[in-house]
Length: 279
Image 1 (tube, rainbow, N blue to C red):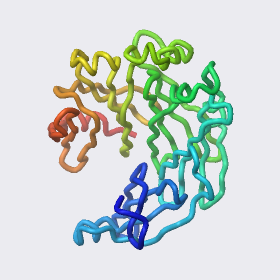
Image 2: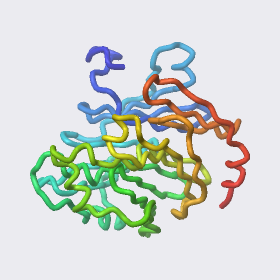
Image 3: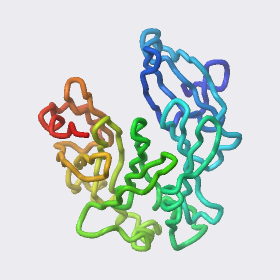
């Protein structure tokens, strides 16, 4: 879907795919950066034909310059945009074309870096969101901070929990110094990917500096499992350096993509998953 800009062709790579079963059809929602539109695909038909089968294309925003737009459901989108002074990452929701900011997002949006207009320091605040449609909850893990936030985006929503992994919570000021050119090797990567499931969410934790990763001396990553109240439940240490993962909940298998060769590894984890099936 990056061939061009003609009929049925799309120049910009979609940022995120949201999958859902609706009306007996497995659908995929893709946001197309540069167009400000979202595509709804019939995934089953697309797999059968080997070409995207598009059900609809909907305008979401008139301008997405500097904007990350993430589908949370077929009609709900989360936007993340840097502030004018480049010290904040501002979250908001668009539901059926209406833009609003729930109270928990306002709370998290107040976080800021200390050095303005340096071009990349605001990325200290960039997160990986995951959404539970039934509970109307969002979980966010951070790329370079060791924090995990869970909050409710229903009309009476509130911040439910903020937790961290490690001996102490990350300091934004301290982490910001690692974004300076002379310190880039000391920048730690924390959470790389976050996935949503019915009873829990899970995040791929790197926990190593860029210098350790480049030299191959980093510890192997792990996957952290949390319930939707934000409490940690399980840690699975991996045997390969993974960059992404997902879980087959039907067969109880964990799939991870290895970093150097792009190989996919499968781990049977059904016994661990059964311990996470709770309300």
